[in-house]
Length: 210
Image (cartoon, rainbow, N blue to C red; front, side, top):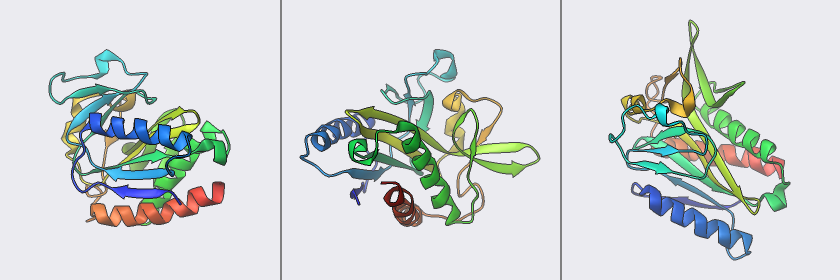
């Protein structure tokens, strides 16, 4: 199992990038263990390598950070659990597609602990909830980057963020769908509850795929 770090206060995005850069370099050098870092950010938007300027609908609302991860615009903020995952794919098989599939399954298995059915959708990144009547809402985002076959960035699961904050962007460039959270689905889940489920589901997915 990797080292697990849980931040006890929101982490500024530049500080998170600095930490990941150093930890990835240390893992590559054999000077640090693999790491899963659970945290929250203050309200902000991030722009992935495929971000389109027109998808930032309200410039100036929150800070916007360019990042080297894949994907488009994403919102982060209080009430959303971010998990930055720094694993050595040299030791796990250099298969990025398999790694992303593992992240998806990790989220699906975590949500299942709360009797929530998270689903993949062809052509749409992240994990989705079928709300019925043709409505589908996104509950979790995925954005990854790899350097020297060490992963960083990771996933974000909506526990109880301010969902209206997503209206300032076209989340991940996808229109015609909404965003939801565990609390929005009527579940009184806390961040601590989610962390327990994440830890348990991680072992079932990643240990089995090493």
